[in-house]
Image (cartoon, rainbow, N blue to C red):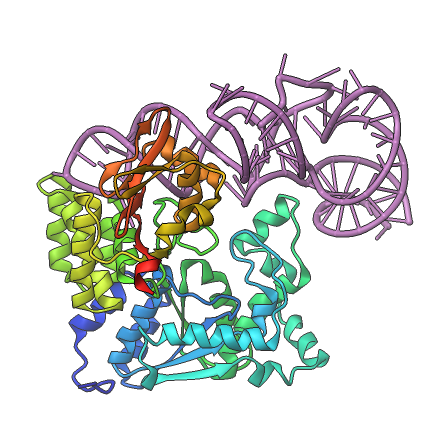
Length: 433
RNA sequence: GGCGGGGUGCCGGAGUGGUUAAUCGGAGCAGACUGUAAAUCUGCCGCCUUAAGUGGCUACGUAGGUUCGAAUCCUACCCCCGCCA
């Protein structure tokens, strides 16, 4: 099925790849010339094994790589085992802890496992920086650094900001762009891919290649995806990310939680829904002729299907409708075995427990303990708060006050719900054994 | 080497002797509302304990000290940052 470069290269297709979800191409004309040359291009993509999880923000670029692969081009994935020790200073800088070779290896493996869920392994070369930096000596470092000036490095926006703002820039951070640039030389990259924030580093690579007598690489930048909070770029440290490893239900739900204003961006950057349809959706949204929720559900569906499969997407959708929209209980609830006959032993015997018929009536004290025990809350203080807020239900009945205390009958098979999406089914451990 | 600034709860960031578990913003959680886990509104938001806003513990870089009482004053130490050399 795969086509070689040049063979039936569809210009429409190519132009769509070069347009949709692209932030900037440097230099565009050269890029087009390269593409039409028919030669398989060497596409560089690097990552630091200081991170493990790939989230949708990364996927934007990875999908591009995939598209190029389908045109017959080759991806060179660079494992930044040296740059990981420096830490990319993009954004706010943090000195990162040095990783042991063991950790680096583990992180890299985890990362690649996820990476190849999007990118075609067959058309990817994995190269480790240590292949070339392992041999670097001081003389090489000096030679490399001699090619650039501090003023050049300070052109980079975040360096400049920090410099002017009187905040620290470590020497090693200054080295980061140089190392990344050297990677391009080492592998003879034709094109480097990255998020918008990688522009500076990629350009340094372009420059260094020129200095070293190579053809300067093209730089292909994709937009930064805004995270679920709707304002900041998606990133792990901000906690506004959707990881591609997440279970279908979580993934679906997280997509549903993005602000409506992000729907079209996500469609454009993360799905294959054709441009024509996107236009229709935009029109519908702007004329208010569609409930954004409907489109968002489709988006969530598409995304779950992409990282799991259609079936999971359908299930996740049903779960969402059931649990969130209708406030019902999910089909599958984790069970927690409890010795009902000896509950007071488990929860602390000094507390009273009423017996109503054949069921046990738990009053507030043991109830908070129980919620902690079941892992539904972290502390009893939290449990107490949630009870007061009316967030706890047992078998569909809100736990309400009973004689100045919160209480609820609990028996084998009872379903305890906290908030909207925390559920546990209590089963009688005595019966099971 | 010299001078100066700073270390506060998940994050940002107030607070310079008591009414401060510690303003405020963000994040998070809950409730209401809603065609969405969007938006909006309200509330909660250290831990344990109690019938209870009851009692207690832990907390403002670390270790001591002054004081009836300290995140706030003193001493030493650790760490971070800038400027000048």
